[in-house]
Every structure is written in structure tokens, then in C-alpha cells.
Amino acid sequence: MDLRQLEVVVAVAEEGGFTAAARRLHVVQSAVSGTVRALEKDLGVRLFERTTHRVTLTAVGESFVPAARLALRAAEQARAVADEARGELRGVLTVGTMQGVWLGLDRALAALRAEHPGLVVRLRQAAVADIRAALRDGTVDVAVVAFDRQQRRGLEVRLLAREEMVLVASPAREFAEPDTVGYAEVAELPFVDFAPGWAIRGAVDRAFRAAAVERAAVFEVNDIGAATELVRHDLGVCVLPDSIAARIPGLALRRFPSRPPRWNVTVARPAGDPTPAVAALLRHLG
Image (cartoon, rainbow, N blue to C red; front, side):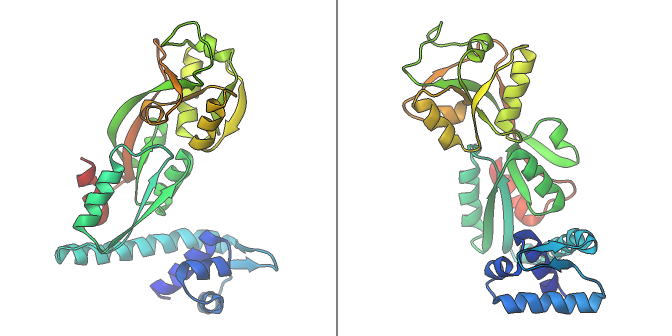
């Protein structure tokens, strides 16, 4: 059993099939199938169930793939140590983030690439719950994400910024006050909400619960662009982090004078010593 075989198995599991894994690995599909068959023969177990339309992990495969990821990660760390000794970093750094959460990540990535041009950076954008799971299973190396206290368990987390959220609305919509809004007033309006699992949704849910006010979503979206277009056409109002709302032209912003929704933007990574690539990015994030 070698690292290439482990890489192929992990690719098939993550992509959900041999053809997609072949595209990811830049090889022909028959090479992927042959590698998996050879490994299964060597191990004496089946890792995948194959049907005409889908490929799924067997019970053994479900246990094997996390161990394969750990082995690949250990090999990457060993290579990174050697690269660092030569004063350069290579390999792949997978960075998780959420829509709208940058807070200097772009500048940090630019500085990292200038310092280590041989390092490939993959950005993985997902909901906060998915990023946390990816950090724990090793498919994401480090993330800039808004975690609440419970989601930080088992991870190394450092605060980057605390940020309030504001209500965004069409300029045509009328409010009781010119610059502020209360939760009770918002609850009477058509609301554009984000899907469960989004950090924005979690922060807004907590704020409304604390205010003892229930809101009824008319729209539920999983894209900031879609949310702002609905608001722009006066189909509803939405709550967004201040840094996002301030960059969107043509919308009216109103603040919550009492207990506004907030989120804490953090940089998070698996517990233990960071890899050299992760450590380099952390330095540039400040």
C-alpha cells in the first residue's frame, strides 16, 4: 500500500465516483479503477460498493478513508518540514471560509503566495457547520470563519474581529425611525433569511431569541447575492454583517440600538502544532 493508492481512494470517496476522481487527479478513469481494485485485492476487503449509477463506501471503507486522510496529511507534514528546512514551502494548503468573510484574508493570501510561490492554495467556501467538520476530518487545514463558542471545541481558535450586524432594506421601504430599527418592527416585515447552518443565520436567531421576538421568513436563501437582490427589489429585509452591508450599493442600512446581532470572526485550525504552511498563513493574518 502506497500514498498514491490512498490518494486515489480518498478522491473516489470525496468525489463520489471513479470518473470524477479521475478528473480531479488528471488521470484516465481506468487508472483510478485499477488502483482501487489492486488495493482492495491487497487488503482483502472491498472499500466501495459499485452499481451502474453510483459508487458508495462499504462499512470498511467508511473506517478506512479517515485513516487514509490522516496518513496523507502526515506525509504532507513530513514533506513540509523538509521544504521549510530549505526555506521554501510547497504542496497544497486548503483554506476554508464562508461567503462574505474575508477580513484581510485576501491580503494574507497574497503575502503568503509572494513568500512561497511554490505553495498551492485551495479555497473551500461552505457553511460554518461544514467547515468545522472539514477541519476535524482534515480536509481543510485552516479556516477564517465565524464560530460560536460551542463550535470551537476541539479546535485551536484565535479571534480576528468582533462585528455587529445591521438591517439592510430598500431605500423605498419606510421605517418608524430614520437610522435605527427594533426587533419588534423587523418581525412585522417580510424577512430574507439564510439557511440553517449559516453563521449569519445563527447570530440572527440568537439575537431574536434574546429579544423574545419571533420573525417569519418569507424567503430563505444560501447566497448573499440572492439575498441582496431580493432586498434591492423591496421583497424583504435582511440582516447582514456591517462589513458586508457597507460594500453593497443602493441599500438602506439601519442599526439595532439595543443588543444588535453580532458574530466573532476567527481563524481556526485543528489542535496541535500547525503545519509550516498553516503557520505561515497565521503570521500574515496577524
